[in-house]
Length: 503
Image (cartoon, rainbow, N blue to C red; front, side, top):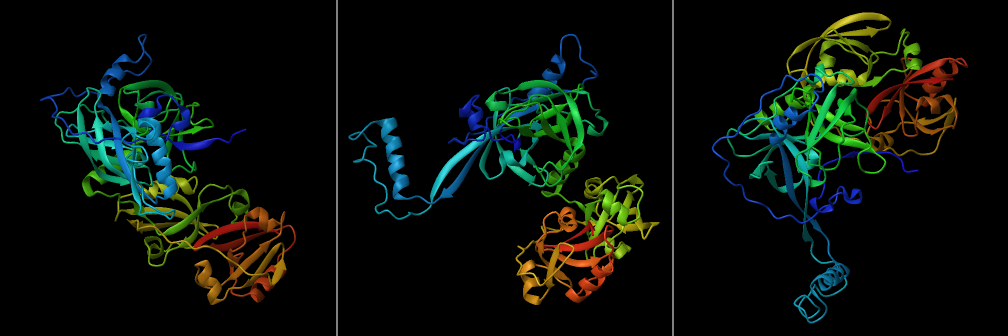
């Protein structure tokens, strides 16, 4: 049986019609030129409908569809060509235009001589998606994967007007982008408050699936706050069973008032098409990103300077906690906001600005939405005692580097873990700094294996005691009793992580 896949749903080729086999296919597309818009256009207002009326959602559809546009992109990529590629192209041309003697037969078409690769050739492709006009002067919110890498962007309104679009900015971490067209009094969809959505509430998805313009589908909110899907770096998805298909990417998810509550982004499917599980980025996330992209061309996120992880029952027990709720600080960046405020490795964050922290994802969402330079109160548990600290939130820096892990043979084995000394060469290969011992092997079915210890991990601490050498590792390990849990701090490719292993 085929395994389910999480799939973005933009760039559906117009040529594929309803073929699910080519949902992300590309095609050659010619750029279009913008045409002048009419002098005025009606701007829909939010409706007041809260439940399904007897005649369906006709008013919602009338209000929203004029502002949900079709986005057509042209992309150009360079690929190395060869004689074999030229022969294939000649065969295709002969098949389409005629056999030898025609204008593109062997006498008329000449590729480069020789069998080696030729200079890179440009190949034109493209795709289609959807977008939502959110301002009368032409700002459009869509998905990053709809316009990523586009050389030209053409926006077509439901009334057939065409515009050349300019990409204002994009945020791959949430798969959002903003495109601008030159127009006035354009139809818009008003912003809604996604935080007020409830599971079971009616929602409508509007977009251009498979190039079928202005398609409206109805469903409910299936779940809220979906994360850990592996679709984007920052996830807080609305899940819906409204039919969403390739080409819907960047389209609108609206409530029964006709207000924008989400941007349709991805589907979970075994077939590549609709199976009742779609995901949309909520406006609680997309609106601040939109405003930041329009204002600065980039997204500014809050930053604490800590690495965090979820707690599980074993870790909670090791830290003496009553439950596994909260975010465990596995590392603190030197001179970062958290370090300056006094947060330490091993602290468990239980509340952020008075809001309970359920897990690491909850904290991440709260921090990234916090304005830079804002002062926030963080409640932590340290050594069994609660403590409030005030942190001045910083600006999130660029991407962090990671390194590949490679290890040598084991020197010592204890409780299913084989380790060796961490010398300068090994530390450089692993991309780590400081003292510790390197895990070179983990026995199957051991407590360490079940806890998640991996070959290439660097063990820094055991039960909060520093491990600087194999000798110290052995000495600390010898004092552990069979059946108890050991709290292990490891460094994995430059990232700190706490694990709780049963001895």
